[in-house]
Length: 550
Image 1 (tube, one colour):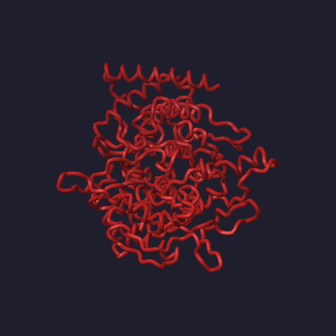
Image 2 (spheres, helix red, strand yellow):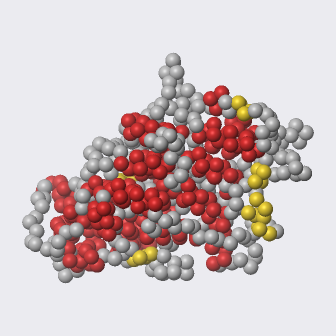
Image 3 (tube, rainbow, N blue to C red):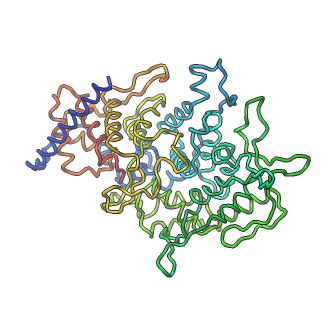
């Protein structure tokens, strides 16, 4: 069945290439269209449609109409206050799967299946769209992988934490992430012990290193605009060194899991706690510590007090605004923000206007309302970003009001993004990844894009557009698009393409692409209205112009 689908894709791709070539040679002019159904999406404000693209998991006709009716500011206010859709509250399970736990029991408790299903279901129909996008971004900065945190009941509280903290302060988020049992187990802060010369035990440096390198300040000192600071010799200035890592590793000692739910059933629901034996914090190093920017933490502090001081030290570092802010911009708007854009967001991170530092709600709002984000279209060659697989899947389905059970993770995995299971703490792709042959342009998501991923994307579009995804043992109801609204446009190729362009590409479809798709639609007999609609939808959704969100 897959080979048959692949053959269909190859044939359609060849036909599209031929049509593009013909369009270039013949310079096909747009044909006059008879009167037809009244366009809706074709008359959308391009900037409103772009905002919905940037702040949700994809525009739907109803949502863009809603934003046009109420305006951008009220829409953002709605999203910032929308009720959160929680992850499922999964029952705690033993670390070792019981032999009696098979089939759906094993799937639902010892894999990421229920969380992946919730993610896509909520991305498609949840009302808290902006919170979801921000939490998804946070999950790719503060990475915990299901490869190691393998039980869904262990991972669920962590993902819920990111949901809950998406519009809070960075400092509060940093505390919650640091004390998360999932993070503690993933990066070895859990059961981390102070130096013991007799046994040779040393504090584990893993969390100390990653919280600095990946979760807060990065490797080099930054200017507020995100560019690296340089010394007198023109070299970058390290933001910390190995000695700093060792000092922070001493801070992160003494923490264990909260009391277990039963024999062999560890507690990943509650934050970690300090290990105390006979009133003494036996595993914590309470000596003096030298942290960032010359700050000294005095000796004799408790594990909790040491942690507070260290996280204050990290969160107050001047690098955090540009380092975190730029990554937010890359995920929501463009991979190559100008230094001025980064600087404006860094300023909001430093002070939200009311003296609050690290207000993520204010940061996200500023990113989406910035002049570099708004406007009908941006023609700069490096503007925009490739939709990563999970976003691409959700956007295609939301455009056509799909009904779905949310069991879609196999498709994102085939495209290179195994949801909640990145290969390492460095995420699916690094924020500094540069496009091969792209003249130095950043393109983080392109790290996942190769010929196999490109074919997987086209194959997914072919499947959902022409056939849908049928139910199966793991798919309660499958996935199906609703194309009925577009059927009246089928006899009018120009109107059909323009309607799809307004919803899917905020009216930025190049004229040559429009003519090519119109020609392909007109090659389908007029009596086959549904096939005409499917052809146009397939060609747009599988195109590079659609998949690079601009």
